[in-house]
Length: 181
Image 1 (cartoon, helix red, strand yellow):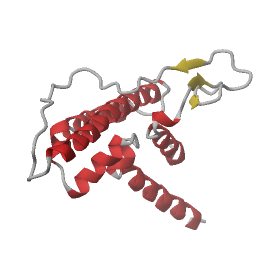
Image 2 (cartoon, one colour):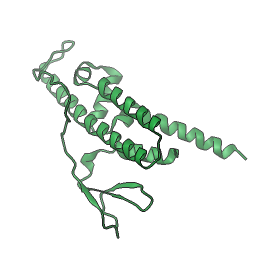
Image 3 (cartoon, one colour):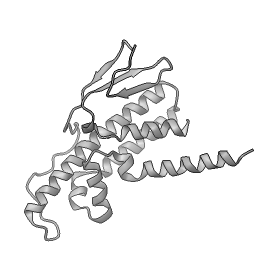
Image 4 (cartoon, one colour):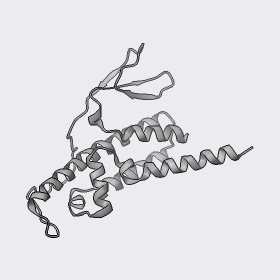
């Protein structure tokens, strides 16, 4: 699987949906799925994508909405943190669903094996279990910064540091290739 395509795909997945007013999707003649704010010229089967703002998905357990005081924080400050955490949960649900769909499309196109697909699903399920509203509300320092990043819609890959690690790995591979005769 080419690193450049994977990185481009990961970067695309982590883009903020709020920045896009209308999104179009289409599949080119090579079977590659594309997303853009502009429909392609000369493409007839273009589909407008509906972006569900604030959609949190199903299957999450409800958390009490009463403000919780943690480590002596003021209740007024807690409301803002709760809103940030709720936003992080909404964006995470959207991002994880998008990543699942992309993995399925890549498997269907033969770009990843069934074993790689299963590993992706396992990793996404693990991320979904670790990223919780309660954990966000009680987080501090570096973890709180990650949740703040998620609340802005930057995506799981960017906020967890995985995107940065993948970029570093791709850079090392590129350097190694240029050194070979």
